[in-house]
Image 1 (cartoon, chains in turn yellow, green):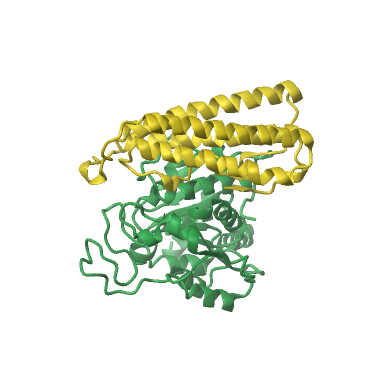
Image 2 (tube, rainbow over the protein chains, first blue to last red):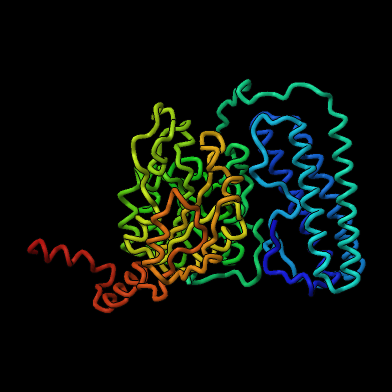
Length: 174
Length: 299
């Protein structure tokens, strides 16, 4: 998880909202990518769950974007996607072909924890009160998201995890 | 600078370089991170996709041109470098990036590498080094460590691996770096530096094979043992020190720029253009070219 070339202490509310939107956008895209990977490798349940997570990230991103527009209209942004890496997005090496739904939910859980840790670590560096309030709000939302994923996890029926060797991955020409 | 006529007049976003084709690598493959880092690097360089040519050989990692919006040529096994050199010399305004795996680059294509380095054509060569032939289901590759058990070395490899970093430095490359997708921000930065270097630039990326690779070569292990050269205080203009560090390939995972020639030599493509400019005033007009051959034939 990195934020490149961004001085958090000087962050304005406009840029903080843009940054938060980009964090959600990155997570949304990554979950979709992982869902595609799961589909390619015939792992449907994690694929469905990753798409569900992608929708949630998109919804949250749209809310943040709306707030930004209401407050600052089309004022140009000072932050770009290339400034951040994997703040809330799952790492590519988290997934495996034929992983279980439980493993997929655990990945999402770790990502919510990772995002929470980011906002916790950033808070002491912020100087603008409105930005601190936004980051505290986002930090607390990550706790709620973590609880939601935790509840989904507890709903999963106990059972044996599928073993990779039991599956045959047919060639997939392009 | 590599780019001779960039048309991009605005900051570019990584997603502008992402094609609609979905990667079919195994989930967890290191190449996904390399691809992301590459998108970021290209956005940093801010050259439009139509001014970039991606050339690759054959293998898992050689699929990469298809996943970008740049021009792409998924060429012949081991022959990416000669093709890329031709493209750059014929189209000097293009930014040419070559990508492939360790088998493609150091085995079947191993004979082309020293010549590409010594010619110093302005290319960036990114090797996704996974120490195995993954696409063909896990045979020994030129960078497989001694003792590795594979389908072609059931009792363990009896060969030492080639050392790509040492090899390329010894042939005189002006820019030599290494990265891992375990640190995508640094990898993107190293690739961007390589693209900006005026001359042959080599980036060895330790990109693990999640299906046939060793456990200790996976990204989780990289995170624990990688040593960024910048944090070690390495002076990238010190070639002898770079050679010493590079000799630890396989033992230490150094990341960052090993060597950047502070006084880059003229590139082959620039010298070709210079030679063309020198010869042009004495050149016959195109419609009289045949006269040269008639004279040589005694007419």
